[in-house]
Amino acid sequence: MKAKCKSRRKMALIEKIKISGIRSFSEDQEGLIGFQTPLTMIAGANGSGKTTIIECLRYITSNSKPPGCGTSFSQFVHDPRVSNKKTVKAEVELTFTSKDGSYIAAREMEATYKRGKSTTQTLDCSVVEENSGRRSSIKVKDMDEFMISKLGVQKTILENVIFCHQEEGNWPFDTGEKLKAKFDSIFETSSYTNALEEMKSVKDCQVRNAIKKQVLLFFTFLLPQEVACLLFPGKF
Image (cartoon, rainbow, N blue to C red; front, top):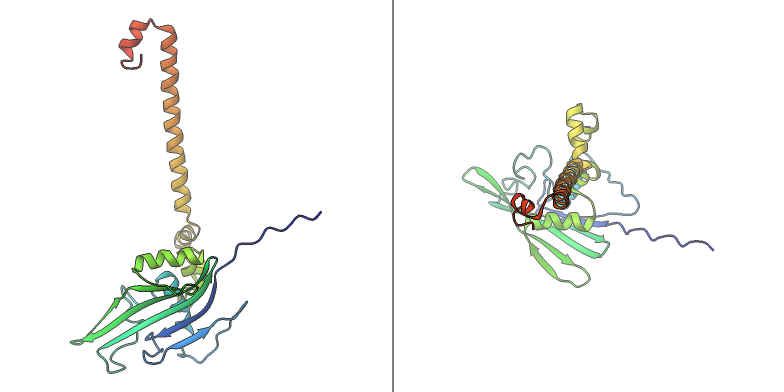
């Protein structure tokens, strides 16, 4: 009798992404890109937004900034001066299916030009459960944890492998020290090392306790009761 094959774990599936107010994608006319399975090819002229799609996928899934954006997303959001506006709102919305349902996740940013200076701030995120239609507003940190949990992929894999930026794609050919640091991050070797150290600490503690108990038992059988009470007060 043939054994039944175990069912494989259902992987997350990215269905479509909606972009507005990001780089070449206007705030007034959002771009909608659907993804086919098992492969989607993106073709277009230079400057048409091919790289922006990957940047937005990386941003919505891991909250990572594209290279060259510095400490903020100021060069990622559509420049208000181009549209002759004081404020531009940018949004990236991702529709995907996880092992426990379908979701629509969105991140929003706002760029403001005032007194000759541009500032960018990140707004609260939102998640919609497609099955129930329930919409929830969550903070950025909670959104990061939600995406990693539902996609089933750690942040370093999203950043450096799945949605790796073309300007950072040569990291496998980096110097030894930097390459080691990258692999340590991807494979979470620090967590493994910490676990080993914790196990060693617990083992050492148990060995010390076992030695103390053996010494206590030794004196219990060899010493008179009165002497044992003096040497080990509270034990007898």
